[in-house]
Length: 491
Image 1 (tube, one colour):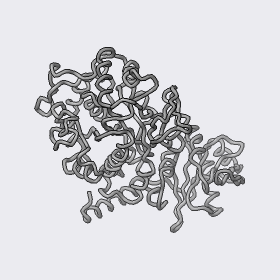
Image 2 (image 1 turned 90 degrees about the horizontal axis):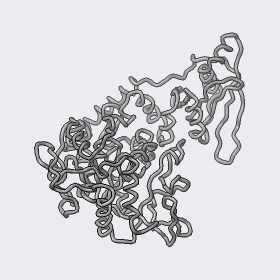
Image 3 (image 1 turned 90 degrees about the vertical axis):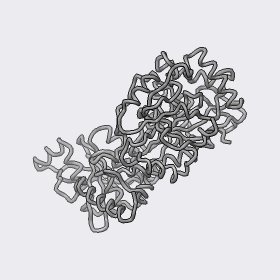
Image 4 (image 1 turned 60 degrees about the horizontal axis):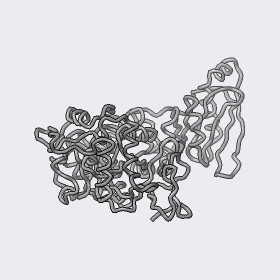
């Protein structure tokens, strides 16, 4: 068990003593409103993305659930619809009892309050510690419906929202909790994802630079490893058979659950009737007759189900992963190709500003030039030992961050300074008038050490050896990898 120092835990403004259990995956202090989070991505403050504490209960989960559900039905709306409500048509068959909106008729704020009301009933200051299921939650409609279908059976579900430099919307979590009546934690898998890309995805890349199958396996495996910490018994995913051509074919769905070691514990409620029953269904914990048989790429069934749940705010379909976009892939590919073993912070830097690379044999120099004030402010959080920060002196303009091999040659440093200055209109005007501008270069040091700074005079110019990476370069190399994967039987 994990406790706060001194055996005390703060839960949403309530202090608990006596060693209340805390989820060890969420150790950060200082998150507002009694929340905890995994370590935030570099450059993000914990206030941008809180996650809920694991709720603690001194009562057995099943007995507590029955009482809480009864209380909720009597005071805050229906938790689960009765069989008399009718059935949901899915894939040509009646699925049994009709799922009802968990807090039907309430505003989003009241929905969130209703959920907290259930958690706090009859035991002031104590929260439920165990969940029945962990649900992978992207924020898309399918993941919302999958979690709500299981909750509609009276089971407690903790949603896990995974983030990395490539996907995730941590700032939306609180709003999602209120709007959709969910309980969500944020899980940062940035470092694991960087290692996945660095080692080469076992099942290859998708249409751009997206390792969709390996991505699913990574998240499923991480969620499976978190089951004991939440006291949960099975996993929930919003995947729909046949919805995506790479990651949601029947054979791929089987590969994902096999490689994630989740064969018997992974439940896909939206298409469960097309798949073999899981342990949760066979044991009677989940009523298979109330699961669905969606398939294909259409959204008509999902929209009808959302209406029955009373969900009025429908997320836009598709998107979410930056690795599926060519503009982003051309930024990421040089990082993967030239840095050897890039980490999550490298890919976060690739998300900022304009990207430039200079190649000199087997030496590669990377310069990121800010596009606006927001980029400039983020560079302060991104810099680390060995980086160089370029800033114009007595002249407004962008910041630039240089990363790569330590000990940049003087000529390359001056080229980087001239390129940075070329994005300042005032510096360009001075150069056109025959006046050089000064650029301060600060070499970032280890924490606690003094940074080394100096100034150089340059004429603003974009004529040096630095160049922006092109999608076509990355595309050709990715195509070569795909051909190799087909030969080797990957994908």
